[in-house]
Amino acid sequence: RTLLHSELAGDQVIVVSNREPYIHEMTSGGIAVRRPASGLVTAVEAVMRACSGTWIAHGSGSADRDVVDRNDRVPVPPANPSYTLRRVWLTKEEEEGYYYGFANEGLWPLCHIAHVRPVFRSGDWDQYVQVNQRFADAVIKEARTDDPVVLVQDYHFALLPRMVREALPKATIITFWHIPWPNPESFGICPWREEILEGLLGSTILGFHTPFHRKNFLETVDRYLETRIESEASTISYGGKLTQVEHYPISIAWPEDAQTDGESAADCRIAIRQELGLGAEHLLGIGVDRLDYTKGIIERFQAVERMLERHPEMIGRFVFVQIAAPSRSSLDEYQNFEARVRNLAQRINRRFEDGSYRPIVLKAQHHDQDELQRYYCAADVCLVTSLHDGMNLVAKEFIAARNDEQGVLILSQFTGAARELHEALIVNPYHIEEGADALYRALSMPRVEQRERMRSMRALVKDFNVYRWAGRMLVDAARLRQRERVMTKIR
Ligand code: GDG
Image 1: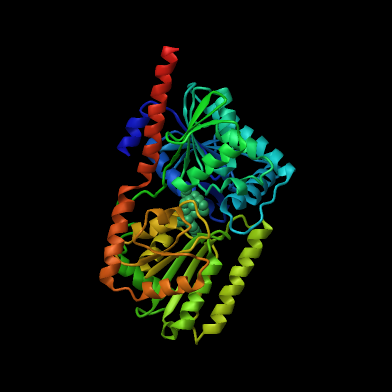
Image 2: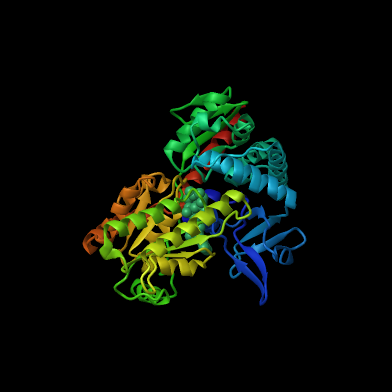
């Protein structure tokens, strides 16, 4: 945090993301504030609390308009304001085309390669261009100087860096791509691939979670644009401007105190089991995800089924709770996925049910963060089985919650997190047998081994926290700003 303050001393920071960090909703009891289920928000919010500034995002809550001032601004966090949230209002048509259409039916499956075919419609693309321009205009309007630090978040705004660069040539634009970047052949099917690459190359710094995604990006640019790439220095020179392409693994804010209102891990363990109608003898698994086809929820349930088949002594003893926050549910692909998840849970439950025992508890609704913490603390094992994931913050949240140094993490090899968390049980989620074996191994793991693995992962996540993620980007940005100032003087 101190590092953030010193790197940003005096600079204006503007964040742009689609999702807002706080959503105001009208409820029967008045206006309530909700934190969305989003890895990006979890990470960037921690940074904004530390460095203040303005966060520009799409106003999506039913009471969002009721709490803003004349300039569409509201101070946040509501209980203890430390920065400004500036809301941009999108029309239904814009939201459909830019967000649901191009971003989530096009770019999301394009970049994840999770066997869902991307859909590209020119009408969606038009909305994507228009909305990127509207957010770029909001950034330009917010800028108090000609060289603000602009932090652009994710695949919703691939065109915005160039748009802002054209109006504010001296701005430091740091773009972070939170999802994977595919190989050049896969990316090449996008009809507007050149425009997207050119848009991103308006950035001063472009960040990915892993060296692998960074390399894929460099190769994609090399394939489709006439540029000069310095692979060693990881810079791309395009149209007389340099972009530094780096990897910055994202993380979480390490909890300062136990986050469960003083409830210890041991208390949570008992309380959650009671709430689920279980006893102290029950073994508990947990999964926490947006209900998204990239997260490997089907494969996870299949691994649970296979484990119970192979180890019948676990029937009646092991329960798996899946928290699945609804996401993008107006899209067909997501509705179909939810139906498949529900049907599979039902089929497995029918197969193994016994009295009140059901092996899978599917909680397909949004939960409070405190509630998630309690589940993390109560679980014997946490399953993260994404088919592809930029990083995956749930893995890190589970580790951070376990100050009792107990619990086992099962982690897909296709997450960015697997590049760091070597003491997890790493699995290929497509290999159901392997998942079942890992689950059984986790449930039978001696406490001493759990402690050793957890202790080592906790040290890593505590050290490489989200402030380091932001701090490293900002140190690099400060270096480039300084170089630019020197070069301008020389010229
Ligand atoms: C993208 C990339 C990358 C989940 N359900 C609820 C809830 N959550 C929170 C979790 C966690 C976050 O949402 C999910 O983060 P992930 O990292 O797992 O995934 P994405 O949302 O897909 O995030 C991902 C991330 O960006 C950051 O760069 O790691 O790879 O896909 O924080 O706790 N939060 C609440 N209620 C829920 O029901 N409050």
